[in-house]
Figure 1 (spheres, rainbow, N blue to C red):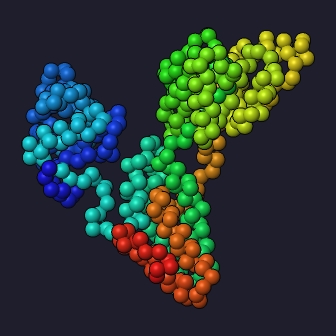
Figure 2: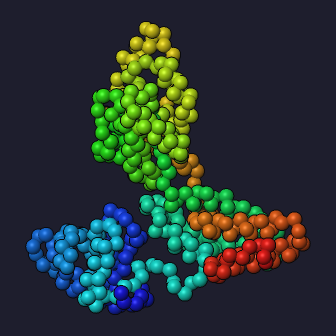
Figure 3: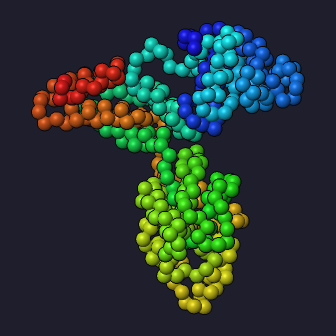
Amino acid sequence: MANLVDNETTALVCCRLTAAGRGAIAVVEVRGTGASRAIEDVFRPFSQRAYREVAHRKLVYGTWAPTGEDVVVCRLSSEHFEIHCHGGTAAVDSIVSSLADRGAVEGMPLGSPDPTDTNAWRDEVWRTLPQATTELTASLILRQLSLLPAAIEELHTLLQDRQVEEAMGSVDQILTWSDFGLSLTRTPSVVLCGQPNVGKSSLINAIVGFQRAIVHASAGTTRDVVSQRTAVDGWPIELSDTAGLRDAESPIEGLGIENAHRKIEKARLVIGVFDASRAWNDRDQELLDRLDCDIVVHNKSDRAASASHHAIEKNDAPRPAGLATSATQNEGIEQLVQLIANKLVPELPAADAAWCVSSDAVCRLRDVRDCLLADRGAPDDRCDRAAQLLQLFSSNKSEATTTGDEL
């Protein structure tokens, strides 16, 4: 492929906007003099009209002629386009190659970092950004492009001025929100569990908005863990529907229940689902005590009235507090989604707070903190060692393998 070109050039440039690897959709940017001509040469709208005749439309669906692949062309301006194609490397490579055949050179996306910028703290933010899977998490990571380097520069000044306590406070302040920063590129597991036929599969389908899990009136339909990635209130999650927890009636069901227990043990959030259409019983209580649920859901609330009447007649145990839902009537689903989001992210950092978004940056700051806390050496010496360690990472990450003791 042609050499990279500066992103301010007016030459015909194409670049990959989505991260390399598997994915549902990939995006290629094309911009510069001759972009519209190159697009028209290889793109065939399904309307059978030439692209120049429908170029006034922002989105046009059609075929990429050299490959025969269905794509969507998005016109951003007269000479600036995005091509949305199937995910993966093969589809993107073929589009980039066909554009190169028409004079395009591979460049950097608009707004990309300056290649001469060697600040590793800023570089870590750029490297982390493609791993964000929602608009919200990406926007939070982008904040740190300016906030984190500025905080590190302030920390360096404190170290040079030998202000040990203030420097320690600055490091601790950055590290306070670093677990939050690292979580922005991870997808926490949220597991729905409970007895068979309480509506776990229906709840999964209601949350994700389509028929992901099989729903059937027969208990034990779900025999294995069924997972689906989605987002709640802008936060990425992996929802898992597990086999009903009971004494297995077959070896296959037993394996599904074992898998369910393993998934529960590793989950970030456990949602216990119970059947509101029947009276609360000892088995429900035993399961609730054993699961240690983060959220308790009483599903089938649309049929709860008869269950409550039955419980009064039999003097059954009262039902514990929880969220009432009806997956079939779509009742309480929005509240459940919001509750999941609140449990996963109970608090947000201030808009001007600085924090790390990569484990490498966190480790380096912890090394700096260890330097300042070291028992040996005068405060001035500890500040010097910490400042050198910080500077090594800030200026050139590849040189930042030296530890505080070696300094």
